[in-house]
Image 1: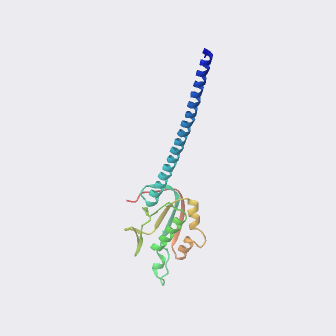
Image 2: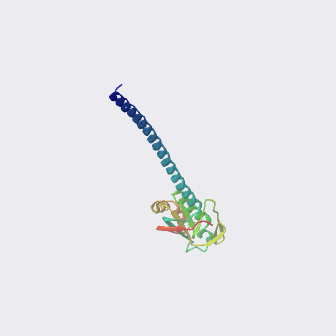
Image 3: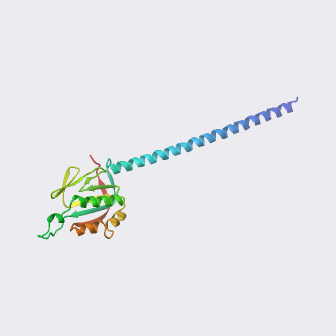
Length: 188
């Protein structure tokens, strides 16, 4: 075997090695790509979990929240006929609960009454002329603030025959305002 044949064999051997190394490189690049893809999916899942956790913290009242929304003011009637029962013309817990229910159904993310944040397990009781929310007494007027889409919340409260109309029928004075920013402190 001559020098040329030996060089050709060496070149062929180096080309085979190069081809094998190239195939190994492609395999490793595919593994890296799969790893990066899995890592990106894990990061997306972690981000989604963090967002869900923040949403749950907001709903449960564990964090301070702010955003646009509406403020619904409920005031006892300014006129109560003498022959009628005055209890028919004051704000009761069921009036407040009706507003809160409508706000939650309409997409409110957080709600407060006279600045006191309410949670999923809050209770509201009527005790004579005051309303008690989670053990704290409040006098009228009652300001119910809700964070959420102001247009949607406002529209749902003002639908004909809905909450506002029913409350006005009871003699309750109702005012609804859209707000660009409402701030609510966390529950203690």
